Length: 315
Image 1 (cartoon, helix red, strand yellow):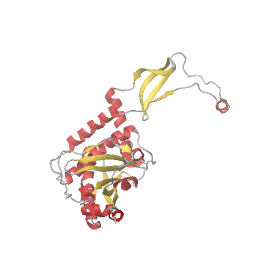
Image 2: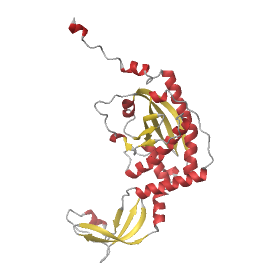
Image 3: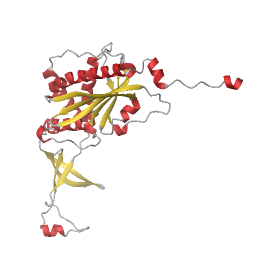
Image 4: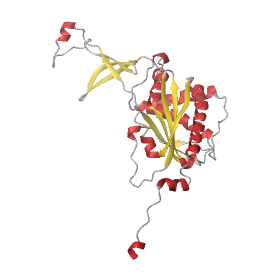
């Protein structure tokens, strides 16, 4: 008898416990709230982007999913950039996700590429400078959310630096997963259609009333602030420089017979001229040299001023 009475009772089902404690809603309620978020973003996010960048985007609600937050984020796939986010008095932990294709396409537009010539980008992780741009994109996505949910106190959303999906840390061994909802939306810029998503704990979602914010006529100011922020991000970003040295011209017959160990002379004698560029823009004229055991280039002249160089990288 003692052995029987001391036997442990089975643990309560995780989904049932979440439903009893307000962490899991019925399908119709969750669907309606997700649609409300989709309407908020389709109406307001295009205005934000156009007023601040003069770029036209289209946003549409696609669908939603319900499940454990870890599974929802994992199910996004590796072509997303993520940002772990909190909004005081609303949710201490939700995830913003944006398709890498949108960030890459936006970067190309801001660097001056003609929209008609921008093609669907290949699937790849974002570079450091693209992750810098993702910071600004997530700021806009987070601010639309803040303006549309009933979070008391008017606090700003706080999010960690964006990171590529494959760099997401695995949960701790004792982590207890929450039920959440994934709100999936499309975002179109030029010819390129990508997507973004919110993964929100249902405990916060079920208490939310989504209301469309009133539009503010601050177009010129907002666009100036975006340009200033982009300039600051570019100043802080690591940029890959490329150095091009002109070699002596050779006959095609000679080139076709070159083998390992053959030597091709530089075109110039004495100080060898080197053209340094970034993102296809000529920046400096340098001379080739050596310092210790490393080859170097010394800047001789610039193609433009500091501000012009920044504009080259931004526009």
